[in-house]
Length: 414
Image 1 (cartoon, rainbow, N blue to C red):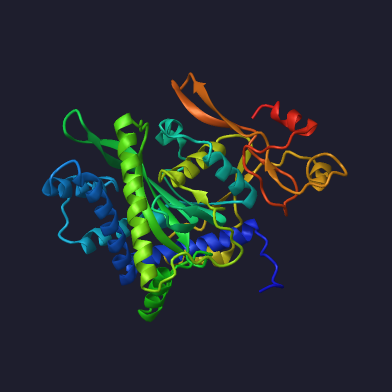
Image 2 (cartoon, rainbow, N blue to C red):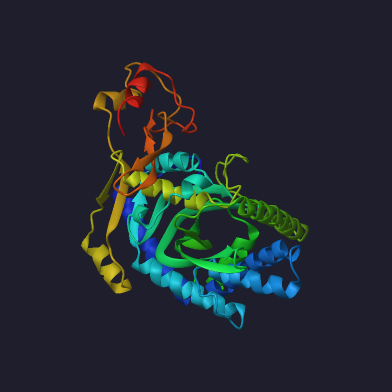
């Protein structure tokens, strides 16, 4: 593999791959028995973490009931639903996910745009996310496919390679209401995280599932569903909720560490990553909100002039394949608007003769802008786009270079 060149991303190639991945993944979720078994095991694990979080606060019977309400209500399902077994939950969850995935608008982002969204996402706080409203979504339901996997260290310590995010609204999220001792239903968006089936993270547990899927005649699709949750519009986080989140994170990290130690004792390798990888270089999702922050940053950036979204070309073969699968062939391509002249692009930073060793995000900072016509604040970003040679590594969003060109750009309006 030493002489193989990295594949160059193109909008046409990205759109084609996204169409095929969406069709294959939706079909797998709706039809493959192993998908239901895998999802049932993930739901059970999530339930056990919730049970352990609640066990110190109440008796076992109450903890079990509340944990089930948090699990199902947290996915947007009615509080009255009491399934008879875990496979019933998995079947309903995957049936909805498969249908919504097929109906969603399809988006792809260029590598440069992806870099900027990552940097923007990491500036967001829980207070910023409380500004989210239904109007921020570019479409009620969408699938965002990335140009390459993002290595993300989950709250439980497991490493994943995020490749796509799916959102769907409207749904209703069950939120605990201490005032009445029950739950309150709030309008929300449900989002899902998909890992790259052929990505760099290759734990033995995943390889076993892949082998079983092939043996059953249902090979894994391009994207593998990892996690789902809902986020309420205008959701504010109280101090009590922050403490509960901290407790949940502590338990998730402990149970995740214990699970990895147990499988390692059995001889399984759960930290295998292929290709070039430096431990610690991944994104740390310390509070289980990175996917939501990434989507919110993407949605907000799409409303600003620095980003353009154009339809990708749809050829006859793509229309035929989409029609056969019952999905739309349309793909929206999100890119950064070109701001530099050809001469600036050639030199890498607008200063002829300069040799730059990195790319960087130019003076990106977020602002809470008040919109009088809507009587609310929105997060906007100023200057979030990369500069420098396209083949060089990207520095962090706060590590902008200092130069006359930087100062000139940063003083311009968004």
